[in-house]
Image (cartoon, rainbow, N blue to C red):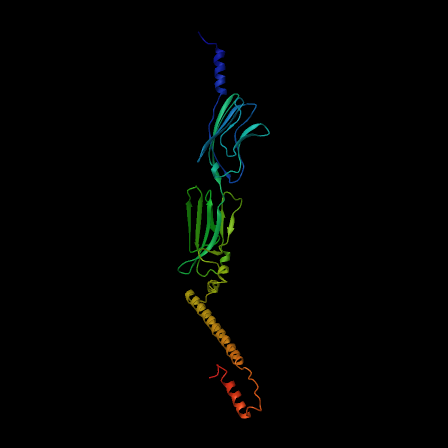
Length: 318
């Protein structure tokens, strides 16, 4: 028995209307932002059900909604399915962090068709940036600029040319990147304040500029000034050494001069401390003698006794 031609036409029409498409989209969001994922522009009047399957590094969960079964959510981390003012469904992820990075797969069925899409989410994290100066064994200066724990990796450039430059990039176990750039400053660089490093990252709308001022591994002059003025003086004269005079010799001369000044001060203070002691000792021994009755003691014996007591009472006189 032959089927009527209109039956085949209806079947063909339904098959064409029931189509499925699948695509993978890769996108990145800034840390701390609110994320909204759309799977279709269909409104809830047209939808039958929507299922989001979330595949993260540490877990898998599912968020779904349908016209028959109602909402379902076992993610328990703030992710919810919401509707726009036009009643279009989307997945909301609040305060996006590295724990939300993963693959999000959406399956939906609507009247007249279905759709499947996959979205791979990554995170954009700004790096911690710093810059400092280092002294090498040959007394040359190296400017260092570092961008730590960022994603993706930052790029670093310098405003000045140097004797050499190097860039080292490392990736940690959590997927973040640290980039360190080193610039060898030419000998005789007078003003290091003009040396700057420029750091660019996807998170920032504009580049960051740093001046390397802090000495890595060695205290700065401001920190050493109260306890180590020698270092401060050597640091200040580093770029003002007379021609032909080695840097080490200059520092040795500075140290010797400071020690001589300190020694002279100690000797002077020691003498000042002894002299008042002698003077006060001489005065303290001059005790008043009791007045003897002139009638009972002869005048000459009384005079001799008083003179002897005066001469014998001062320990500083030989």
